[in-house]
Image 1 (cartoon, rainbow, N blue to C red):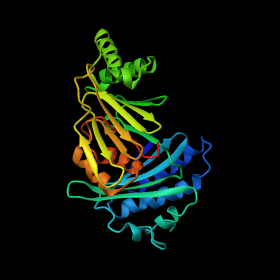
Image 2 (cartoon, one colour):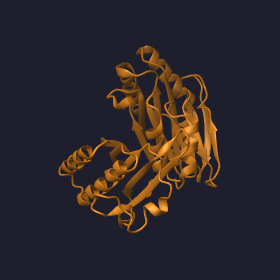
Image 3 (cartoon, helix red, strand yellow):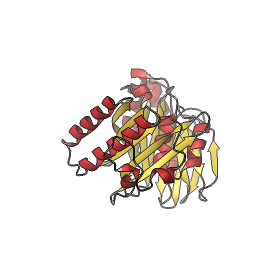
Image 4 (tube, rainbow, N blue to C red):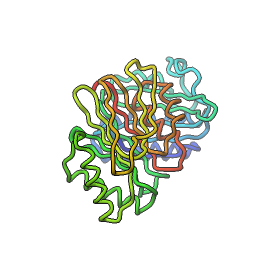
Length: 315
């Protein structure tokens, strides 16, 4: 998943610009639901202006499909059932309301609302009905073009990397590591040998140190191994209890730790821009991997690269 467009919504003129820009963007694609998305933009944007007064709208793309997200850090939606009830709509929109958005035959409306002291706000997500096994999502530090986080999919493996520092040097290291990983064969059984080779490559090329997590998707679940301090959250198969590991432990690129998860666990890996309390708050509010990932990114502080990877049940 990637952010195609993001817009600050602080005034009616911001919303009008967002509507026009998204409409113009879709004209250059084969997307067929332009009118519905534009209606959704106006409804969701007006809700932002009416209640929290400011927020953001994101247009996301995931494997060729488009997703719309409305995000704010207001007081939250206290009664989600009322918000999606028939006849409920905001002033000065076309009157479609969240009810119509939630009853489209092709799209699913998901809502995350937080009312904690330190963490509050809402995310409304409009996405196609499609059950995906894995999700990838990243947002670079302060929307800068250069960042040290990277995500790679290579066959049955998903790799999450977090290079030390920021800026062009971190970005250069991330690109070099991606190239190395894509051009070398590895397996979780021999992962220590692979990490040692990568360690030598970093030294030889005077690159920055990094944290690396490798997720292997299997028929029965997932294996995770890695080095460094990426954080690992597990939502157990009963969908009620959570556990947390303080990083994938081990010295950077010298020795690894390994974990195994069964078919029904939900696994979340985060880089160090997203803290433990935030993830617990979000995971306690919903079972949607999409909302957990986007919520983790959006509500985290702008102090570091921010990346979340989620692997859900049904692998």
